[in-house]
Length: 292
Image (cartoon, rainbow, N blue to C red):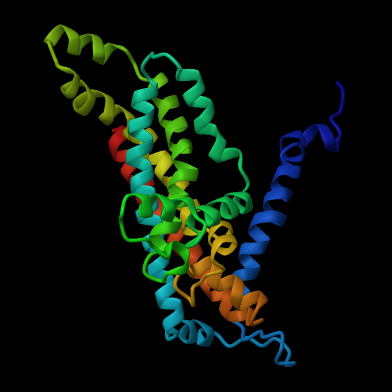
């Protein structure tokens, strides 16, 4: 009988070890360290050593009007973009699920926003939105409609950023829903044809209910990304004009790398982490309910 060595006995632990270490180093440790910093008053410019102050930093942040406004903008940006993306992406997927001339070209064009870098997208859309040379104001002037300041106006900056997000990420929803459509069983449709159901009944009573788990999966992915959006907002407006487009992620970045208030920045990121977690759990519960 051949005796097994240490390596052979522990193969089931050794092989997953690199993946476990990867998760711990790149995910668990940063999150844990952020939670730790949120209980400190660490400010790089103060010259004082880091000290633990408990919930003091949390109370300071909660009393900060700028934080509460950024929190509201985070929800506004997320719900405004994700709801439209879900509706538009699902509609496009239903259209592309049919056979028509030029379908391949349309699918290729849909992928273009996904492969562009956020900074490049920001530069291009800033040119579109430019009040003097932008194409959007030119079109409005041709139509004899009042022109807009777009991202340079505090009243229109958030809707303008939401439009950019919708343009960039609707194709992702479309691709996910298309994959879900391809995996639907044909049996309910055959039964519907036998029963004489019309196209509207098939859509709302068969297709959409069966697609709902897939749609909710897409919503989870997009909502998580929208809640922590940073690149598009910072590259296009820097959080301005004034503070009119600051969301939690942009504000946390400024607290860290412009004001060097690391403790309060960590508090904001903890709030963002909790919001993302709670939203994900809520949508996952809804998804399980639809699956049942």
